[in-house]
Image (cartoon, rainbow, N blue to C red; front, side, top):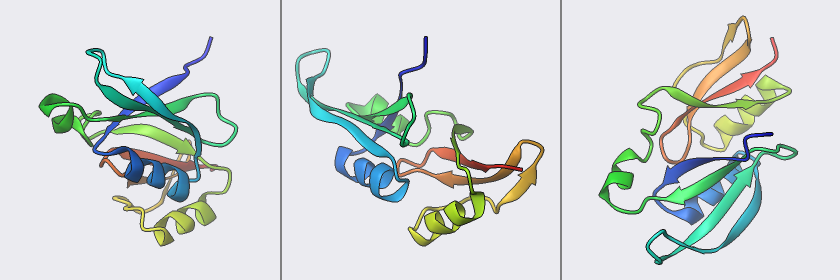
Length: 130
């Protein structure tokens, strides 16, 4: 058993794909046509870090309720955690790519950490070794 996907609600597919693939370095695993529960067209878009089993379904907001939660799915908390092997070079790469960090890097018992925002405004921990 494993967790296959988590969903992040985004405003639009293509800017989200650009952020996760070109900026974060994820792989685009799927991008194909699909249908909403009531039969309207949408896309099925999945990205994931290289070598990972768990992916992220990039779900375009559909309707006011979903639009209202873009960037707030975790109620302002850090809800996503990206572990990297070498913290400082990855942090520097993301900063130079324009990723918005809302905290400075710091050391915690579990490793180096800095909080950044994804394209939708969700908070992520960038995590590295101690």
